[in-house]
Length: 413
Ligand SMILES: [Zn+2]
Image (cartoon, rainbow, N blue to C red; front, side, top):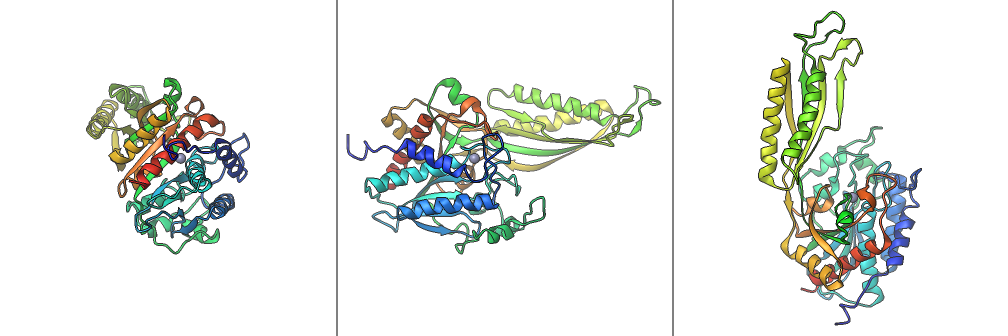
């Protein structure tokens, strides 16, 4: 075994770094509340940058607040091999979602630094701004701008619930950089992340080799019946939009089961008008979210949503307006990046399986413009976006070793 193959990260230092970032915006129940571009987010970023500069990395920040910390290689004309994720969290978020991917990349580079390993291409850690989309919707906005999916002016203009815009908040916390977002080259991007689902834990595997991300479509549905007196309107002939909504909710669940095992479908939001106990509801607004990793099956689910909603409203004697507001095709990660991850996993002797990401990630945006893949590690009970989110130090260390060796492979090819 060569000296390089024997290189291992420091799992304790990785764990301690994750816990140190969690000090900024601690949650009430053991998790984190570090919403994008708040003072807490700034403090976490500041500490991250200090750590990067301590090991001689050069830091650049783009005008979406994305941070790139670079360790030079032998040939600095080559595009860098980049790894990272995000430091912002949900309001009731955990300590690991996003943070792990950033600090695993930093730990990989710290290990290279400690052992004076010089890569051929430069290696970098990236922190993407506002991945969660909790304070500023939509999610993954800064990696989306990087990938050309959103206009920068649109992203800057998004406001939070208090009317503060993303652009102003970037400036306020000192993270509106000079570098135009999208101009910074990426030779390849790797993102390590907790799985946020139960599959690795159930299958007793330490590493998920992620080959792509689900496609998803979002719909706004308005069901239009007629408000009417709850006492004097007979049961026959009612045009009850909420009864139709109940049928739509059941239908959405059945649809996902009809397209098992990969499909998921959810009604997560609903409002009832006029929302009065003695008036038959004349109008209901609800959302539908469908996901499938297979493009063809996702298109079939879409056709089914439309025809089944039409059948329900016809039966109830009401009308429906169904608007598709988002169509994100499934993504396939890069062959060489996937191979680098699976080869490293095998060489390190970790048990693994191939999988598709159920959640959206920055990597799922950037993969449209740069070769990309992801590494998953288990989290307890598959729980995430929850303060109880937890992961085993040994699994985090394993994922970090895989990340470092995959980075080495890609940087030295
Ligand atoms: Zn995340």
